[in-house]
Length: 346
Ligand code: ASP
Image 1 (cartoon, rainbow, N blue to C red):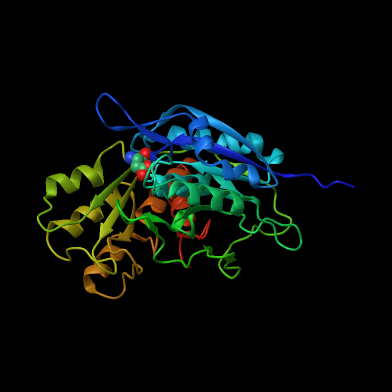
Image 2 (image 1 turned 120 degrees about the vertical axis):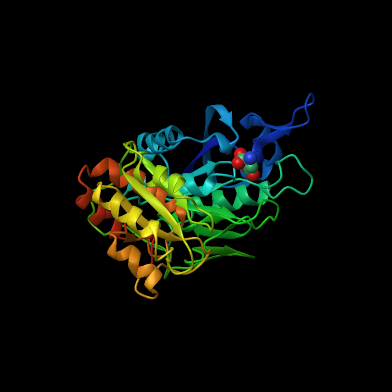
């Protein structure tokens, strides 16, 4: 009896990995998928069936909009039964946003969805793209002794490290180690072999309803980063614009903000006006704790919800997702406080 070859769908959206220098203006521009394949002949050595899907147009990920996430999630939903895993080639600039969004949009995921890309184009001599792509394919097809996918999560593979997508953030524009998930250990590390961190990898509950693709997103969210010198006029715009349903406050340290004067009064006004306001820290690691300082407590008393140790990228994606599910603020708030995809340590 011959066993079926495992199969992977490579989804190419653009990004540096597939870019070439434009001979006219010297800038890097996306190039076709055949170019990537010709640079990585090693892919043929896998005993895998590897199909590809190329987005049109290919983009620099700075041009990503939520519509691309809907296309990626929809494509994975349509092809879900035909493949053992998915690899998404994506620019690094917004990869953490896209991986976060797709992780919320794919509920009960039981197969790997591995985002990867590179800092240097695949045709460059010292490219990191070849290694990233080969390992991403290996991880997307990896099964445990019982034949279950090793990592049934949306994740980012970069520089020998596999991170949970909705925990990741881009931390360097020039190091090969471009991503980090400071509040969550890596899901796997690639050395001579790939070592999976079974204690961290999440699995859907047995007997779950199967994959649900949530394509609806409500993008009426603003992000207000606190800084000394912030004026009431600017803060009012971010907190109280009529077209906004939710606000991410990027606060100081463990979730602190100016404790006196116009700021807390404005936050209270926004809460009374029905805005859902969530607190995430500007710090790279650590969590919001609004009970630690009076400058945090004042936000809690004004109705602000803790974002715990969420990244801003994951919080934005989570709000887009839950605002589309819940039209009432109280329902959205309940979902916000839940750990839905491993995006918070709670
Ligand atoms: N600007 C590029 C992009 O995000 C950067 C990269 O891929 O590394 O598409």
